[in-house]
Image (tube, rainbow, N blue to C red; front, side, top):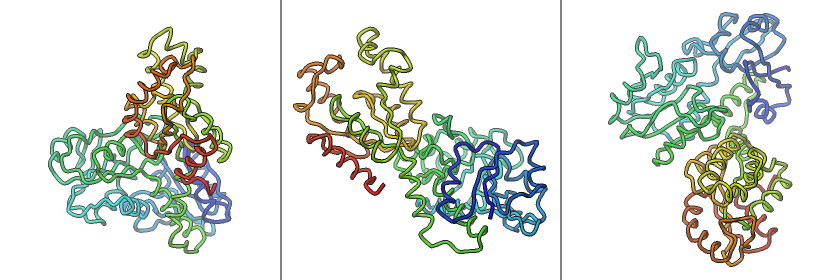
Length: 416
C-alpha cells in the first residue's frame, strides 16, 4: 500500500513519523505546487493520502465521492483510492474533539471564538457545537457575512465565558514569536486550543498557561486524526491507547532538553553526555553567540558591557528556540530575560542544575563570576529566577556522571 501526505511545503511535517508507528505501509511526503495539484490527483499514483494546507478544500472538485461529514464541513484531509475512484473523508474533526478533551477544556455553555475562516475553522466550528458550545463565532482579519473582526471579538466577549480555538497559521514555525490574539482582555477565558503543533507550545498557548487557563497545542490532534486516517487506510481498528502512546513518544522526542544554571554547574558537560546518550544535537548558546558575532561572551562583556551581551544572547536564544529534539545548554544569565525563558519553553523543558556556590569554579573567562565573592553574589541574585524559570530542578553537587543520571531521570529519557 502506497500512502502519504499531500501538501505544498512539508519539510517540518511530523506525519511520516506518526504513521511509521501505525502500520507497515509506505508513507511519503508529496510536495505539490498549486498548479500541479490537478495533475497529481488525476494520475492517482497512490492508494491513500492525507491532505494538509492549503489543499483541504482544493481537492474536493477532483473527488468521485465524499463522506457526508466531510461534505458538511467543506474540508477533506483523507483521500482513499478505491479502484481508481477517489473518496474524501475528514478525520481532523475527530482529532480536534480528542484534543479538546485531552486539554480538559470544557465548552459546555461557553462562547467558542474560532480564529480563522478556512477549512480548519469550519471543522473546529462543528467540533465546538458537538461539545456543547452555547455559541460559536468565527473571527477573521477580513470579516464578512457572519464573521467578526478581532477587535470586535475583544469588545463583545470581554466578560463572556469564552474558549478560544486558533485555526490560523499565526505562531507556527518559523514565526514562533507571534500570537493571533491578545487574550489578556478576556476576563472569563476558560480554555485555549491551538491547531498549530510546531512549536509544541505556541505564544497563544503560553499566554493562556501563564493565566492558569487550560490550553494545548495541536500535536495531540495531529496524532489522533492520523490514527483515524490509518484505520481508513487499512480497514483495521487501532488499539485504544494508540493516540496517547504515540503522542507521548513524539512529544518526548521533539521536546528540547534545556539546561540552565550557574556558570561551571556542568550544563555543557552534562548536555554533551545527554546528546551522546539520546542522539540529539547539542547546542551551547555561548558557542552560538561566538559563531554569530565573532567574539566570545567574555569579550563582548568586557568590550561592550552586559546590556549589549544580553541583547545578543536574546537573539541567539530566539533562534535556537525554533529547533526541536535538541539538547540546549544556556549561559548562566540567560534566564534573567523572561522573554528568553518563554521562547525556550515553546519547544523545551527547562532543567535547573543546582550546584552549591562553594562547589562552583571562578574562572577568568566568566567576567561576571570570576571570583568567589562574585559567584556567591550571582548565585544569590539568580537563585529564585532559576527556580521560577525551571520545569525541573536537579541537584548538581555530585560528579558530572551523577548529575547526568539525575537529569536523565528527571526528563524521563532513560528508556531511549
